[in-house]
Structure formats: C-alpha cells, structure tokens
Length: 408
Image (cartoon, rainbow, N blue to C red; front, side, top):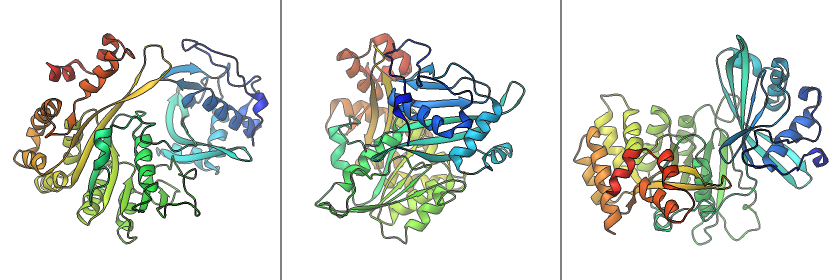
C-alpha cells in the first residue's frame, strides 16, 4: 500500500511544463520501490493518462494530451533497469529488451485496503546518449469500467451491438480510446440480464478486469474469462487465443487487436462459426481500416478473404480523441458504417482498390438517408465546433482537410 500523504496536490495550470507529483522526491526511486508506486499512482490522481520513463531523462506525464515533467531530476540508466525488473516481477526483463524484444504487460498497485490502481505497460529498448536504454510507457487504467454513455457511444449504433454473429471493429490511433470503448461494449453485454452471455477476452495486456460489475450474487449470469497475450503471459498470440476459444462455447469473443494474418483469420473463422467478435485495429478512417484488414492476407488469398471479411462485418468504427479548446476535456469523435446485406453487396461488387469509393459514397448517403447507417468523421467533428467545444481551426488541425470535403 502507498502513503498518500507524500502526494503533492498543489494546483497547476494546463500550460505548466512541470506538474509536481511527490512532495519530496527520493535520491533514487529504485532504493525504495514503494515510492515509485506512490509516484505512478499520484500521476494518475493528477489526471495523467500516460507516464513515460526513459533512461537518463526526467519522467513525463501526459494530461489531456499535453506532456509535462513529473519530476525535477532525471532517472539514471541503472535506476530505470531496476524499476523495470521490479514491475515485471523478474530480474530478466532488461536482458529480454537487450535481445531486441519488447514487453507488454499490466501492473497493479495496492493503493489501500479497498483500492487498486492498474497500469498498462510497454517496455521498449532505446538508444540514449549513445548507449542502450529503456523506455517505459505506463497507461493509467480506470478502476471503474466505463459505460456506453461514458464513452459517448452513439445511440444509433447500440441496437447493432448484439447480432447473431459477426465482427465489430473499433479502429483508431494509439491512445485514442479503442480499448476503453471495447470495455464499455463488454460491460453492456455483461449487464444484459435478459440474455446472459459467456465472453472470452484476449488482451495485450488486460486493461479492464470488470471486477466492479461482476458478482456471483448479481442479477446477471453473464461471465467473462480473460487471458493476457504476450511473452510470459497466459497465451503467446491472439491467434492462439481465438482458436482455443472455439472449444469453450463462448457467445462473444473479444480480440484486443486484429494485427496480423493469424489474428485476422481467427476473427473471420470465429464469426463464420457463429460467434460475435469484437476487435480493434489501427486506422484513421473506415476506408483505410477495411483496406488494411484485407491486405493482411497474401495476394493469392485476398479475393476470397475479402469476401469473408465483408460477409462477416457488422459495424466498422474509427474514433479520434479531440482535446477541447481549454485543454480540460477530450471527446471521442467517430466515423462509422453499419453493414447490412445491401451494403455488403456494394463492396462485393468491387475489387479491394475500389472500396474507398464505396465507403465515401455510403458515408455521403448516411448524412442524407436513414437507409444507410453511417457518419463521416468530419460530421462528428463539426458537431463539436457547432457546440463550441473546439474552434474550426482546431478541428482542421485534428482532422485532415481532405476529410472535410465530404460535407460539401
């Protein structure tokens, strides 16, 4: 447990370069790992979404997409190595990185008797000042599972979250809330009292445990089994998890990221066999995401696998987090397309290279007709402009100018 009396609660401005986290900093963090736990929890309580720790650098904390220094001094190379071993729970972590491998895992701090704070951790080898070093990126994870309302999930999409089978994709850049939106969708299923479901969940690492909503004495008999993906974790790959899940009789399979041939093939196979598959991928638009997923397959397979992908898709969503003008809030803005038989037919009539034009036409139709359920990213962004949360110039700095042409 940590000593919260050590935390600095001095008010700060969003533009301050330094945001103090501890009242007094230690000479070395690795001399007392508990004080490191206090520092990272304190950063989270300050509102930091991410903490970056590099060898021979001052730790940075990111608050509402802005970077701030979190300490007065830089951390030594040996200090960061020992901190990595501490949170990995094994002294072999630095040697793993020196072999050119990265580590993705979760880390949990017991804050008090009734409170825990979880972090998603990435450890990557870097070159620093001409020598080998380490970068730790720690994402602060909320203890409360978000609801669909919390993530501002569109009402028109909610009826399509529970198909008989099919793939629901949430795309976006790193740090744009894909995992948080997936967690909200999962909570929506777990709290469905009328239709309790078995969910299997594969994440790298596990960010949300759903402990705050699961109860053996609750009204819903839904359950979830979670496995962490990665080196030294429960399973080595997402593909291994998906194929094992097909023997576990789930209704819903969550795949943290469809990022390669194996995981994409598994998602499609699971959908064809009658499961709902929720997954994420990296893409800035629906058109880009569809093309990337299809191109994961070898050239000789692409035509057949593109057919399987389009036939399986139910919803494709891309989202961006946009910071408000005063820097105090972030909003999720989304582009989305719901797939029905008519929409699928329009894709299946075209080669993969023609999909972008199909998406553009469907997004245009979605703005004018209820027959197509779709919304372009520019329309979602303009809603924030109209409501006064951001200026037009800020909107254009977040969203490429070409994406606004669809509104013309």
